[in-house]
Image 1: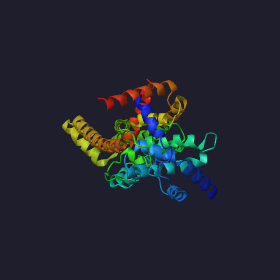
Image 2 (image 1 turned 135 degrees about the horizontal axis):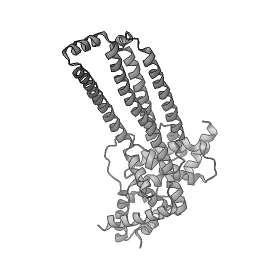
Image 3 (image 1 turned 180 degrees about the vertical axis):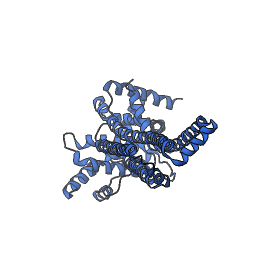
Image 4 (image 1 turned 180 degrees about the horizontal axis):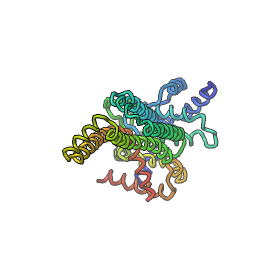
Length: 164
Length: 214
């Protein structure tokens, strides 16, 4: 791999690294796992980079490779020692105070999302990232209609988890 | 408010400031590290499976019973059978490698999973072929032994004198079949263990996507 390619890749990824962090946030629940998944996504992106032709945006392409890694390719490096799960609220470095009930509800919501299966997580993630059903269907390889149907089911499932 | 809308509001809050910020150097050091993806494991394990069967075939060739087998002068029957075995190995290996090359993280999730499963299916078929090959050659050898092995022929003669030749045939065939069944059972057991551990998550996710099509 030549240096120029390395340089352009690392620069692009540095700029867009939040997409990878967000994928890790949905799919992992402790710092160690987050870092491990981040590492694997980076490797997969780098391996696929020579094939990235720029007919889509770098960021769009990252969503696909990132999710594919999280759903299919990723395998834990080692059986990680159970570390304390961090609350999603650790992601918030500076934020205005929430009112208590909303904060509580959000905590439960993130917890509920972590209970979904890998495919459902992908749907939620793409939805949170404002992707339309066309993008969602193309990323997952399902039809737009099915993406809609599944999204509704995910919403129902979340509601059931929250109000058993 | 819709639960997901509430989540989205929080998700977008503070934009990009809530995530760790890795430096150019951090990311650069990451691309130098080795992947531990499932595809890599599948590749290694599949290669081991090919190697395993090649070693088995060579080990059998050197075994004592094979030296005895040479005295039967059955090359005309066994040689084409062996060549066929190697040709089929080459075919499966080629197919495995081509399938492996099509695996790409830039495909959509479903196609990626299908390509990985296709690669595994080739190895699975190869294992199946080997087990059948093993069973067929065992019975061929048995057939040849009945006709050309001196000890066997004298046993058969003795049995026919006592009128027990059918019993002798039946016992030999049943014992061979049982031994083969045990051997095949062990291989399949190992195989499904490895296969199950390796592809459990992938299969689950693939089923989840497939379910949407119904």
